[in-house]
Image (cartoon, rainbow, N blue to C red):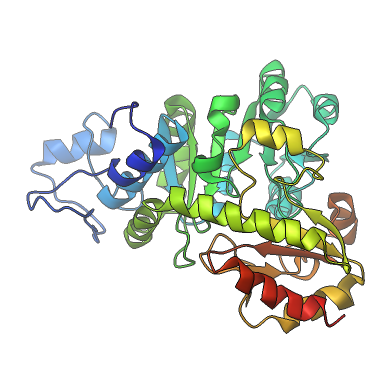
Length: 393
């Protein structure tokens, strides 16, 4: 596909390689292996001398279509698809880092990501320093001689803090390190980190890329040397955190409507955030599209809209927060996000329950905090569902 096409066109047409049947919709290739024409061709494929499919742990036409499509949307040279968002992060760090390396990570990360860096990687000799997502000077001060990776989510989960991607990319370059950005909340429709200087983009394709809560998937994107030659693809080939062909096909179809969904999610979220700011039992609302957000101006510079995630602090702490959750009848009580259906969760006891209280406090995740992933329902119905709990306090 030409670079001249707009994102919504790329989301529909990139990655289509029609078979002999000349199908209009992308084919689903459910096969574990591939037949070679000769022993010589098999040897050439396995050695890398000849391109082509070998084994679906690391080569599959449907998965390749997903990789090509997402790479086009992110403006990346290469993409490695994985079985989940967490396996994408794991593939990134296991493919690029070694024992004795140092990582600088935002304090404001998804709970499982914190545990991966703080607990699992630590056992393999990779040290992590956690710093404020928004204090560039703190990132610079944390740099060591062995720093190899800077890792951020922006907007962060769940407080929607905005990190300055360009500024942190400069810190990474000066340190001789890579900057990886989890772009799950925005998707490439709202934010393209590589254009701002990031080296790697991480996705949980489970979220907005699929958009309907159906399957798990993940991806790591960047330049070809970093993604394909320095070890990320090699880790996937050997260890096998593989995206299934079926899941790749489902996410491919989800990406086709990504632009119109992200615009609708953002419009609904903005209206919900403004409404929540007026509720007497709500102490604070966190949404990048609000002028009250601490990084409002930065969000306007590096995102097209505020996105679909709104977090808000209840005045009555955990008891009030749980009352709002339990009063809902329309909104789904689940920790997933990015679905067409609105979801609501209490981060302190769900997504961030496995990290320490000290880590939660440092990240600003209080007992009264709620996170709503605003869906595509009529916005007045979402308001009415939240109001049921808010008004009963």
